[in-house]
Length: 382
Image 1 (cartoon, one colour):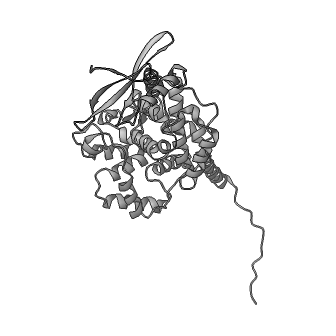
Image 2: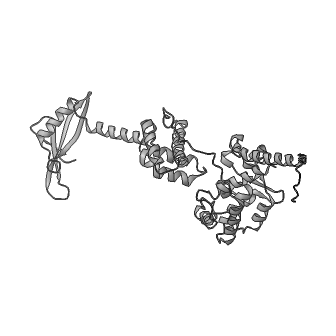
Image 3: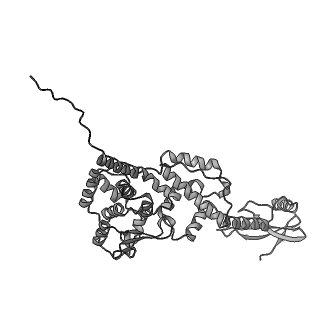
């Protein structure tokens, strides 16, 4: 180290060093004092670069001795503590990243990422769960409902709740002290198509040249499979010989089997196979994540109602057709739709009731005795 020079102030010294970027010299001031019985010697500042003087260094020394200012080491320790605290600070954004790392095979990955990037991250990404208040969630919900459907808003808030619950369960953060109130969603909507609309749909599919859209829609109609189940369907899941389709992890439940009826069997047997293991593969043969644009084009060609959902709606058509036939009881329908409980299947109960009523009316017509002649005399003109 360069030679130290004393100043007129006890405990204040300096050495000469080059001014950064020049060949000129300037003083670099150091102070020396005792804190908690330990000798401390540390740099204060540079003469020209930092505009320090010996008098300023002496004042700084007095403040540090009195404990009114922190030593350089104290500031370094405090900065390191802040850095460590930041590293251990689990914001909503960091929780989401950790959640993804620990759940690499979760479904709806792309939708979850979009929901976070577009709605959750901008509002709450830098906050910790304990920083959130009910009013924050309520404000987000109100703003979203101005442009989004209640079901969409529910999915966004459900993702936020899932992230925080994951953090609390993993002991990375405290859970919320309040319940996130979800918007009410009408899940009782049952979509159906008339015979004319179905004929128009078949015609539009036949004219369409997309290799996957039409077959996906027809498979949904013939089997009642969900959108995600269709996208996850592999050739190895289809047992053509025994006539069954294995649904992998449907709606988070254990694998289930549904019957493979003749129309679905004929369709899938004729469907072109690629090198992909998936029946309806996406780009690069990977699992498909979307087909919205292609199926909507078919919907428009068939002139179906604007609010008809091409895939989920066809699942409803499948269920409605079976229920209204009067030949399928609700328990069997529940099993075919792989509903966890009868509650979801009861939406089709009125269709079965209508079928039973028609059957009852038919019985009434069959067994009603003919009306008696009431003896009206025929008037013969004169």
